[in-house]
Amino acid sequence: MPEIQAAPVSLMTLAGKKGLVVGIANEQSIAYGIARHCRAYGAELAVTYLNEKSERFVRPLAEALGSPIIVPCDVREDGQLEAVFARIAEKWGKLDFLIHSIAFANREDLHGRVVDCSRDGFALAMDVSVHSFIRMSRLAEPLMTDGGCLMTVSFYGGRKVVDNYNLMGPVKAALESATKYMAVELGPKRIRVVALSPGPLKTRAASGIARFDELMDAAAAKAPTNQLATIDDCGSFAAYLVSDLAKSVTGTTLFIDGGTHIRG
Image (cartoon, rainbow, N blue to C red; front, side, top):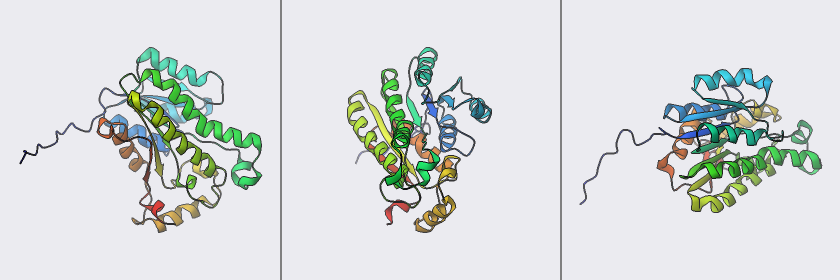
């Protein structure tokens, strides 16, 4: 029988990898949990903030992560996203992974019935939450000359009806579908595309969903583990997914929700 070799201690490493993290709002953000773990494994990170108001919350976190690139990025503003990638190209000349953790819908569209959402509101939610990931992937592609990983954040409300999730359900369904198609298109370049699907977490973005505390309680009760995931759970799993250990993982949505999604 062949001898079994022990895995080297350094097998799980992101040393030398460069990543862009979009979506940190504060220390409770999923994106921050991911950034913190990727940094702990040795990655160097570029971090964006939405606007001047959010900069005072995001910049200290980015500086603590040692980020050499801290720039504004509002995907609704023409040219801002392109400027982010131009800065990365200038500073690093390459990109190994991208974390896309942003979503948005107008309050009236988010709190109303899907059938009542406005045309403009639907377009805005799809643009910020889905098309921005497509745009980022297109801009990242020429920088991923040695392959890479594009990661977005979804929710099981895109697959099953979740009370009060409303418009974001169809939006997340579209995001997961885009993940599959881009995985096929970019696979020959060894660029992987995955969606991470945590259960409900108490983040700033989640605060806009009506009766969210009830949703969290129900999810915890349904989970086989009887507990919800944390941003650190998301971070450690995401760090694995962007590492070379997950080089064959692409085109899929991976749940990190204590098993909540397996129950109806």
